[in-house]
Image (cartoon, rainbow, N blue to C red):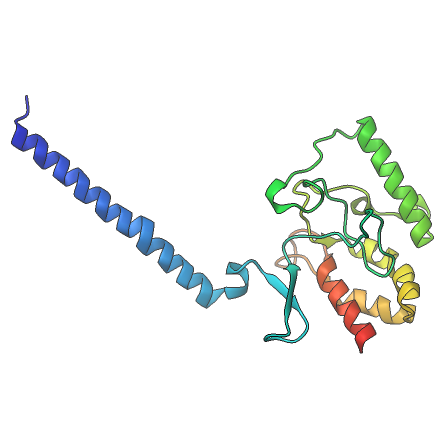
Length: 208
């Protein structure tokens, strides 16, 4: 049976250990990692935010290169003058607080009907056949937040966007090609196009 003095000593050691670990792991380590992130990778550490306009007071934060967003009107209809993102099942769409897919199986009637509706709308707006529409144009990602589309889907939208903005098709096509991001490390994943970055560059064409 331990003496009161021995028990008090053990409690004292435990308390000191807790205080040291709290300072080291709860204060010093987070501060060190935050400082490292701000110095080495400030853009990534701050959420890869994207601003429109010039830098300084005139700059307006328009989103993140890591989270997609919709380019639709108040009724959810696609705006023809913008490149469209892939569908999202996250909340009301691209809700970072509700990241998820639809969790519907490939034979689920709701999913089949949704895909058919999306295919019909894209075929009509872009003047293509259903067989020409890539999968990412009509299906949501697992996270519902993907900011990229395939180069094939971006190219499919070129004519519609060019006509809506009164720009030469060749100019818009060249813009798309310039925004294609290759595979990570040259072999991981597939080439993609960031829709927000593409649309910001597209707006600059009109303003220029």
